[in-house]
Image 1 (cartoon, helix red, strand yellow):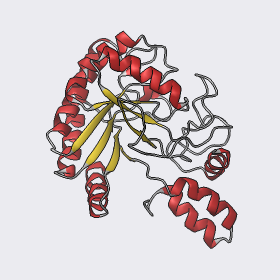
Image 2 (cartoon, rainbow, N blue to C red; image 1 turned 180 degrees about the vertical axis):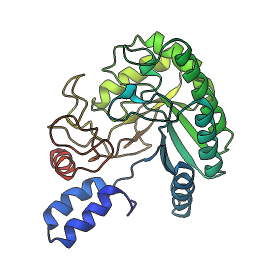
Image 3 (cartoon, helix red, strand yellow; image 1 turned 135 degrees about the horizontal axis):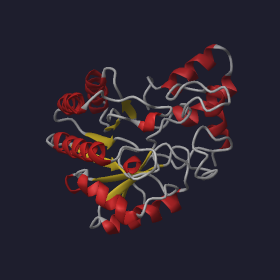
Image 4 (cartoon, rainbow, N blue to C red; image 1 turned 180 degrees about the horizontal axis):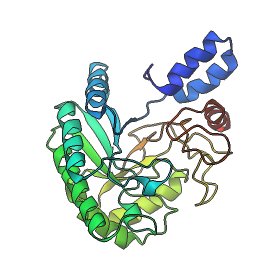
Length: 285
């Protein structure tokens, strides 16, 4: 457990305000390990500091690399590196910061899947993106103790598994440790495992990890991905999944952090939203 996550800091605030019941509820989030997202600002320094602290504690840091150009189809998490050269420099800096420390990196949520849907990059830009992802895998895998999982969407995305497998192959999956499913989404673990197994079969048996951070009540539907009400925390992070080929359940999305300002008074994407966090924790089984 880190004392530096948004959830952990909020627990301290609530205790200071005498709101002990809410603090205890929020501990269901704060007491679990979650990932460190790396974006435009300070990624190299953050990767260095967090991996160093994890190593000193005998733990393995989990990072999410999230800076691909033309990110998120210009939606709530739009942004990313301004061009290909900037991205190559950015990811090389992250890889160098990790050095020989143990770390897992989930690479670029939505980046591959968005090349196959109606809103994402196409043509030359898609080809550039696949090349950048393959470069990122290659740079990260130069580090002896880094595992890399390329993001591969979720069961609610309409892609044909063969099309997605082909896009992942162009993106360097052969050199990666595997792929990640359900990042920042809500699908139940059984459905994610079935989706991942189909994709794995198309990729020669590649392993995968599942984001279980908010999957406790399943999905509210494919269109309900932006802070949908009534969701719950899912299975706790573990590498003991009991499922062949599933390397871990991870809390890749930090539970309680907003998906974006989608019309119900939420804060911007990535900012901690206490009422939502408490709802996820209270609904957890």
